[in-house]
Image (tube, rainbow, N blue to C red; front, side):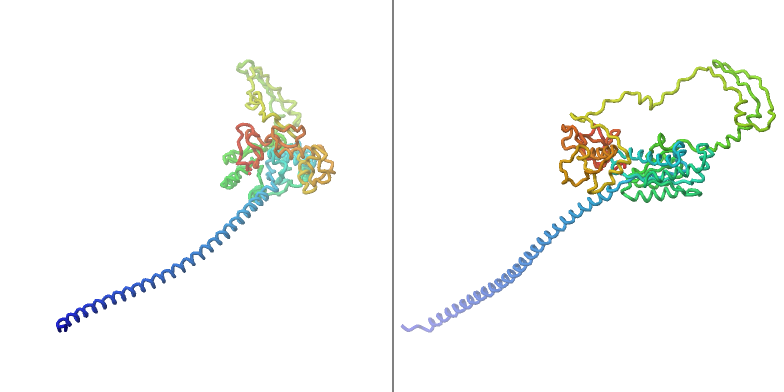
Length: 486
């Protein structure tokens, strides 16, 4: 049957509608594809960027790893070098330790019995001073050098000593200074000549120079008589480390201005220095002559505290206007008779303390205390001067013969004196025995307890002994590092 026109139009309209729908679908698909492409392109670009960043990060990580390893190696090298420098520094500071004694010889005077002996007395004074200083050094004595400088106006000092009566001839003092200088290579008696504070200036400048040297472990100043040094000490003591390294050697009693600075004070008056100042006794002798022309007075007698009664006096005029010292003494009246009760002498506190019974000695253990060793400073110095292969073999000379024989690198053929053997034993004793108090070797040459303890203080700056090798309550001047001669 033939389709009507209206039906065809309906189909056409439907076709048009379908076409519009298909076009819309195509555009949707096209839009979706374009959007997908744009998203894909963006993701690809982002992926490339992330890959570049990852590559750069990996390179940075590799570089950081290499840098860290290089830095670790550098740190290790620096630490190793610091250890070497610390060892070198310790070696330099302690390789040649010395003590300097600077003496103002115009007032810190040597004992007159030494001065009167001339050259020999000077040598004895040098030896005595060195021994006294080394005794204060304790365990450091084996390695310590002593340097002494005495500054004085010899001409003026000789005249003053002659007027005091302690010196008959001024030339004797010159001979004494020569002997002092010859006594030890490091000792000098310097004539500074006439002039105010010449000795003072030399002492001050020399003191400053030595305190800048770490090898100078202690500075001894013979200036106890002069308050003018107080400002100088106050200036030095701004540095606490320098204060511990300065000590005043006392001749005449230390003036209060120096005492107030808090400086350490050491007294050598028993053997070396005199404690009295020089007095011009010639003026006293010239005043004795008037005694011969004075009246002879009978001395009143005092008995049992009664009031004395004036005695009669007679005036006599000698025929000769000049009188000698002996004549004046011969004509003088006799001394008074004293029958009053004699007061008991006050007991010296030191004497009372010495009378107190000593406490039992500390017992470190089964082996006990090592016997003390007395050493000669000269012998000790002789042993110290030996270096390298010239050093004496401890085992050979203390326990000998050395078991190593010819293979030993130390000296065996030298024949030491008894004093030198004692010095070798003294130096060996400064090293602790590995067995300690359990050591049963009868002739062991090493130390079995710390020999550096004095008055409850371990004076060794680098003590090798353990705490139990010290008496209970021992204090350390530092954490096993110089103080006294620090």
